[in-house]
Image (tube, rainbow, N blue to C red; front, side, top):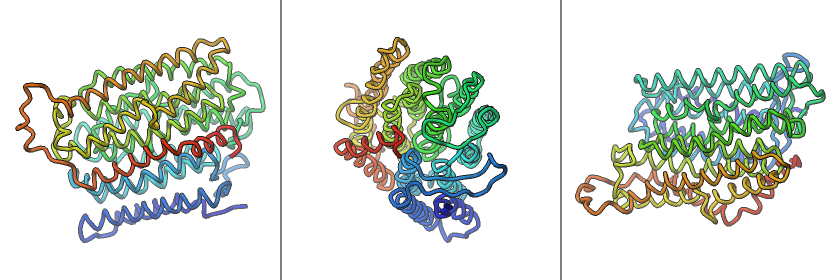
Length: 489
């Protein structure tokens, strides 16, 4: 039975965002309040639906007997939609202050709000066609955000983002068509929908993995992500922590566990190929982050590496690894948005962009760097914080697979250990410089440095508090993720 309420959190932000382009606000403050209220209302709607309407679905339109636009609230969709709906209002509060620094606020908040709707649509997609359309729409609706400043660097980043994303999506479309031709269906169902043992379907899966892997920044398809760091920090946080890159790993989860099925893929050559790509990306991203001196680019390469943790868990293709991937998708989103917002707070208040320029800043920005430090410790994987829990779950799942005679899970565990060490290096260097300046450093040079406004550090404080709280109340969350990973919901 169709429940059209499922469409409400998808269409409402699109309509409100488009309307804001034509509303003449008296000033920027009223415009930002409009955006904050709209995102908050939509988030409340999403959470209400996640609790009260699990399993609800709607068939919007059928092109053919096979191709149609359908939405459904299932377990994996709940995980992604909950993460997005928690972070988006807080991100909008942050943006309400930060975008005074960037200008063009009407355009920014309109597309920022519309992106929310498209992302929820992606989460609630019931078949591959619907997810593909939302995935493509996400590219085009975030493009004005990436190119916000419209200078040469932004235009170059936008072209790169567009070419990579559209090219990848086209490859995924080919894989979807092969699946439809040989299997006759594109519906999502836990365990996969493959009914014929056609070797070409393994090629189709590889096409879709690579295609969706563009947004997930899988090496060597990661090039657009560091380039996009020229966008405003509110946008890069959206790209690196919440919507775009998480859309990539979410799509790979759907493709692996709900479209082809782990049982069909496990033990094949294509599993070895995609797992190898994930392992290489884990190491490459960490190493590149250590080498980068630009703060936002360092965090961008960190995202490349941390996303590969999630992809590695997916490519293990077990229920335990699936649970680990979902948990790291959640925890990385929460932690990384705080790290990016710290970089944005430094740039907004003190106009510094490089690691070497923040020496001693913790004494002038104590709130901002306290939040950065807590989040960094979590991302490194130091117990008992959330990052440790998800990484431990992934590593444990990999260890279970090492007895199967395949060396790749063992190499994956080694890659996770290497990356954890490199993560400690590139994050602790920032903390050390901020808290422990060199002996010949002149503290008087910090007289101009000031703490970020409350609209910048406030959302970071709320997100960090939730992350710490989850650490001590993780059992119910992991129990829910386990039910999703086993296909119970």
